[in-house]
Image 1: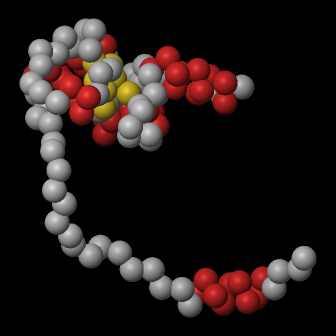
Image 2: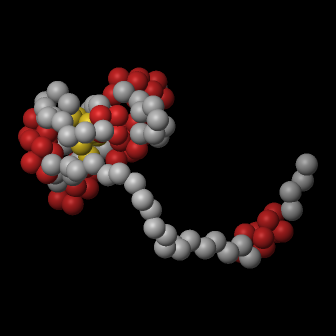
Length: 123
C-alpha cells in the first residue's frame, strides 16, 4: 500500500487540537505530611529505588533533593488516617517509575514487579 506523504503533511498542518477547557472535578484527596516525606528522604535518600535515577546527577543543582515518595500501601486502599513508618512504608521513586507503578490505578505494581520489568527491558 502506498501512502501519499504530501497529503498526510497537509492533513497534519490543517488539524487543530484544542484543550484547556476548565471543569470542576470532585473526589477524595488524602492529606500528605511534609515532615514524613523529609524523614523518608533522610532514611532512603533521593535515588529511585527501581531504576537508580538521581535527579541531582542529571540536573545538577536544579535536581537536588527532588524525588517522589511512594507509599508501599496505597492510601486509597486504607481510606482512613493511619500511622506511617517512613522506613518501612515509603520509598523514593523517580517520576517515571512512580507513574508506571500507578498506571493501573486499581492494581498498582509493587516495587519488585516494576524493578523486574525495568531490569528485563534494560538488557
